[in-house]
Length: 251
Length: 138
Image (cartoon, rainbow over all chains, first blue to last red; front, side, top):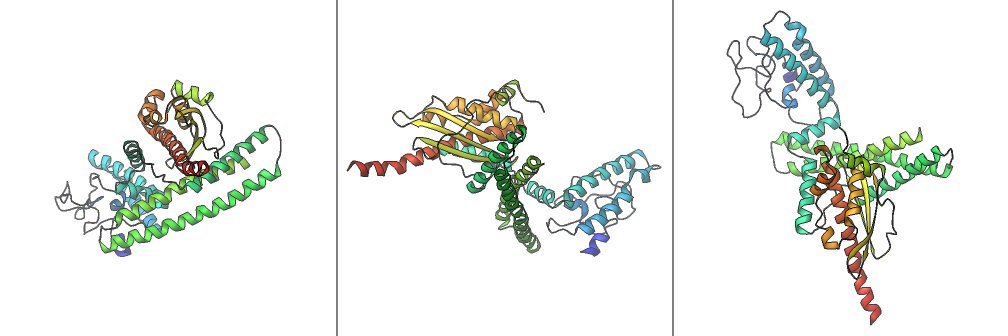
């Protein structure tokens, strides 16, 4: 893995090409090229629409070596930096700028485990809001009840804690102090933080299942894993917002 | 993003905030959440079992202004309607009424979900209540 990544600056294979696209040729020398630079003459290339994994030459896997990612990011940053192209022609300068900006976006997205997961879901066509809307339309048409993506007991917990927080805020405003309420909120916060950590563990289990599928090259079962990841992220959103609200209220 | 006047009005003066006894046989409770933003919405209806008309509705929403406005409007709309009429309310009508921007459409979806969930809960209570009444009558 490390070997193929270290050759990213001048790749001679084609990990940087969008799947299914005709092999792009270098604008300058005409040989086959990769995403950022021509493998033959080394000239910067116009950006091609590739996903962020491909941009870095990574497979679409979620367990990602962030140290390697960082190393690659810095190496590419240096080579793509617009300053390097001060003496080059306008096209190259413009391309280096575009490539640099895509590099930054790609790095920021892949570096963060949650952003990386959300990005993969989008890449794989999992659109949460669209799904939710369609499920509501289906419920309207069939008269069946829509299955809520967030489990009812979690919703109850979220709702009750929000009520407590509201109470706390009102007490604070009135200058009152209720130790029992504070204790209850404190306890709820601990349980939430545990949940939050556990959810990341759950997410990693799905990552492993996904990566295994990518390695084996099978598409069967992909959807199930993607849906499971979405489910974990959904619950995580709730817990994250709540922890944030609790912290704000306790300040 | 700026809110429409109607959203601001509902946000500042939310209608029908509150709660009802969820154990009451005539009360249906819908508790729903939008994972996109972490909002949570509770909508309750009180139904006259003779006429199937929703006589009262209450809500409590923790979320953004659009979510509060959507649920506030939803309680206004369901009041006085029959169960069947209330089931016809579409999220797109809420979007139109409140002039919600595309990024806030999920708030209207949430409000429609809440209405359906509350009605579903009430219906379930009616079904489980019937056999008991029948037994009592014997």
